[in-house]
Image 1 (cartoon, one colour):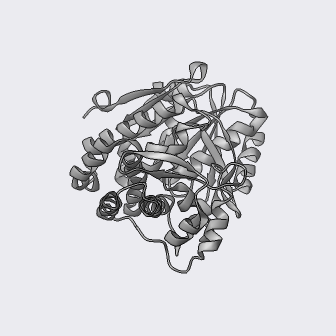
Image 2 (cartoon, one colour):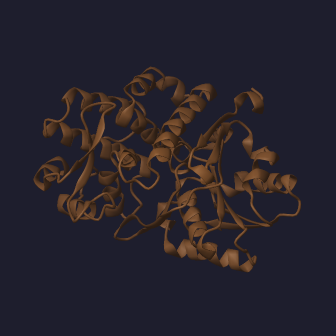
Image 3 (cartoon, helix red, strand yellow):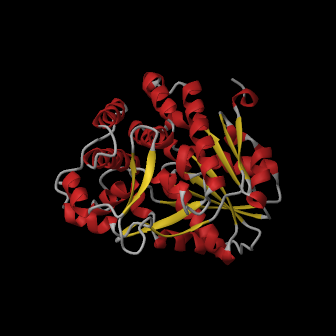
Length: 365
């Protein structure tokens, strides 16, 4: 397929802050698209030491081809969730200061969710907000974290506790890069894909059940269709509830449990998508225990997650009370009361306030 045939164009509708999402093969070489995403004369490409050797030179060359006057600097950070920290953001600030970046500078986030989150947060803070572009290189980032303007870093006390809503100028998702994505990273991304079906689209959930083999084989058409569907669903939710006052919280299905597990394991055990997979099963199990949803739907969710090679049980050795303590720091809670995203069954997630702690402890034990 040619680039023109492969590209899917979507828009996140936020009035003056609306921005395009492009999904297709070979977009890293699209100089026109990158030129539209870069504002001003300074561009800082933030990436990590795994992605950069593969794609950084190509992206830099594409930016130059689109506008030879742009001054480009680069910053490489270590790979992994453990480096999504304030210290890493400080390195971004140092790089911006070194290039004398003004308010018209642009940060280009080239990497997965960690790079996108922390680079976006740095962009939100530098001179009270500069432009940034998301260039996601993992499936998880393409379908979820690159869209919607949530930016943040982690603290030892919890995930994403320091952050800001700061929308990108563009999301450029080159599906060809998924060919180099390690298998474990690809599978972790499918947890977020499955989440979209589980929270609000039973037909999409069933489609995933039918197309599992094609997706695991990385068939380009199936992957592109999946990414487009997820982005379209999220773009609609973000347009209706940008700062998560209501509906957008449903996108956190499985995340309150998952974030607690990641934090308890020191951000070095499960990948984010793997933790979300476990978290979704815990949320579904809790829903069934509370007689809010059929047990059969939990079993169907477990089956699909396992077909995608994802974990479905809580890692051994974790203390339920520690996990509950971490969950109490979750951003969705109000007035100190636990507020979880549960469901009535596949495709019917809901926000549930004041969830009984004893019931949560029972599913964690």
